[in-house]
Image (cartoon, rainbow, N blue to C red; front, top):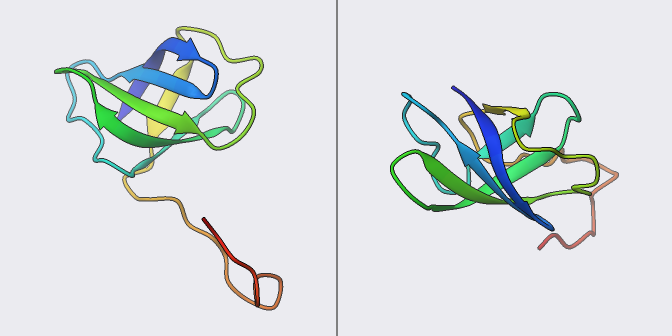
Amino acid sequence: MNGKIVQIKGAVIDVEFKGADLPKIYDALLVEETGLTIEVQQQVGDQVVRGIAMGSSDGLKRGMAVKNTGSGIKVPVGKATLGRIFD
């Protein structure tokens, strides 16, 4: 499913998905041009979801393409994450 950015307020991003099923809460969205991940937090309307950017939103513009990954955010596990705390 592909959508487009319709509003940016700092780290809060609204994405419109016309003619497609809305992503589920906690689904990860990927801004194709920048590689930024957005986590869906709310379904705002019939075709719009609101999410939180998991990195800097600098350089984002309305109309940029966004892809729904269909799954939540994933963190690799192993020695690099052993003993770490994630929020």
